[in-house]
Image (cartoon, rainbow over all chains, first blue to last red; front, top):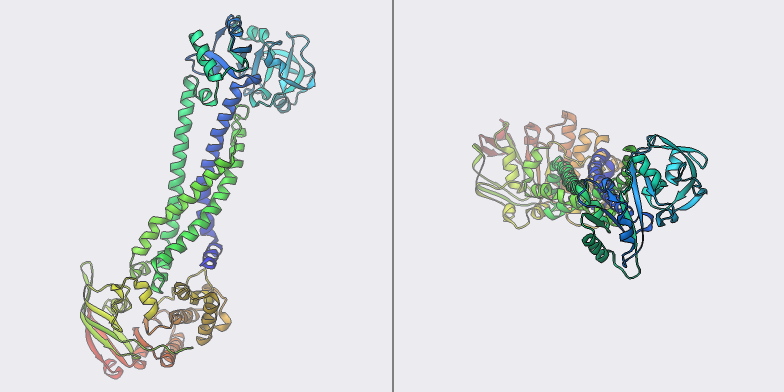
Length: 368
Length: 231
């Protein structure tokens, strides 16, 4: 039986390749979307842990957290809280670097923990906050810049004082400027986007978050990736859109795989009827179909995993969103896609297999 | 090759319709064990339907069909019953295109769960018997039409059937090849002692068979010695 399965698959190469290809497309779609979703979650996680913070305070009900506006005066009150160890303001500037619109420029307090936590890999800290800037190593590499070079932000040119690495995708793909310079460039004097907080020993992010929100009406606290994904109207929209896309991909993938399997089996009705004519029991014929179905599904799923992993990464780069999201492939994600691929392949074979075993051999043979 | 005893075939008042078309009407036929019967008739006369009823590929709408007293269609496992009793040969060889000649002959034996080494030995023995030992590992598309039909004959004999049913076995072959295939079929029938029912337009089949049954519009018109039916 195994020999027949192997021979059938090897000798009917075109059929095997097309069937496995159909399964691969479905599985690749699932893998790419799962890794993209996981990547978004990781990005969101990094977003709330900027500079080693444990939570971020944003303006409530904004379309997107980067559009948040908080008064600079809030910083002193937050820093004075017993559950806060340190707090520092950030002013986020998006699309501020014309040559790399995906780069985020952070306006940060030069004496705050955000700036202190950056590890310089090249150059020095800015000596003149008004004329110098720090660049993340990913951005520096992408723009082929080094200390001594110049970077133009919102039309104003800064000398690159040093290159840092923080391990956070957002930060390493962006640049850090003194917050006063950022305020001047954006015309947002006395304002900041958010305040990032490191909690006092023993304080819990969830409890402190609720307490801060109560103390400062009109703010929202983001302390976990799910909150970050849902934060603001755009975040909720994106989060729901991702869910819909994943479900659609699963349905489309499932239908595509089931359809491919069904077509592959239906075109072989005559061959399967012949097996029944020469004495194969329906169970044995079904075993052959399932054996081939499983083998092709495993082959297609493996191919799909490869395409999904490589294709997901290439797509993110091609769309120029690699600064915001890096597809994250987890063993669980791959395992789920593999399981779904094989299960769909096998399930796709059930109906045609059932039909073949119910069909009178003569009727099926007449169609050969 | 070991001897297979012939099966007795009894068809009593069998009728079969496909939608509004009546293929067989009240057909009765007795075939003795070891007998070779030719079924003749025009296209659409019901020859192939009768063969399908005898082989248990179709169920009669009325009457009954018994092989050695067994109604194959009514058995719990008709496929197993077919495997134990009947061997089929069709006009088109219906070989599995991805399998070698040997593997095609092994197919019925896989269904019977025969051990791999025994399967292989029996398939090679049968291919030897039909004169294709040297073509055992060739794929169907590498064989001539006559050779493919000889592989189909070997496959039909794999489970040592008591009844061999052949539906236009020479219909797709030229006259010389037809002659060789018929020689083979009747030689094997003589050697193995099995019952054989052959549906054919070919008058050569009628002259070699013990008896010819003639069908017209789903009814048996004549059943007798070859000379009688070919007049």
